[in-house]
Length: 219
Image 1 (cartoon, one colour):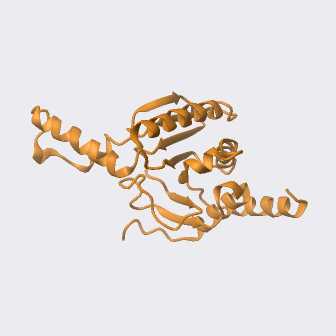
Image 2 (spheres, rainbow, N blue to C red):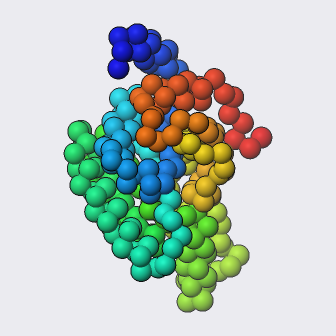
Image 3 (cartoon, helix red, strand yellow):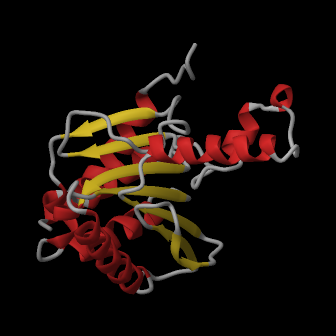
């Protein structure tokens, strides 16, 4: 980083520190973003940047190419193992959970300072569908009455139970199938900077943009 860029990053960080920092940021990237030369290192850097800016939690969706199920399962298996290796290297008392394409928890570590949720190919529609199926089974078994079903019953069965304040789509212009229930009131930011080129400065700029918005929470 150049001296001028370093000064600007420091100045911008001073500006964002004066206002509330989003507690939970969501990010969408693709499997190709991870599989290029420095993809996993970039993800480790991203987590570190989030911690340094005061964010408490990040949820990450990794889009996986829609292909033959066996091949897809093998790809997800390799990604989860590699992610676990890199997340262990993030300094500090961080916790993380890594879920596969079926929403099954593959790796987990407890932590108090920062929390990471990573979903590899497990989208929001399937997440909500699974929650509804489980509720219907509870109704069938007589454990819950249809008239008693509420939003909390669905929310309690979701993989990520926290609502993101800010949703970042790197290098894309369309919404993704991730946290479709939880992100209903989230602010969205579409960046033209692709994953390979993103810097801490870009994350700070995104936070600054978020701070300038007036959140309406659906009103």
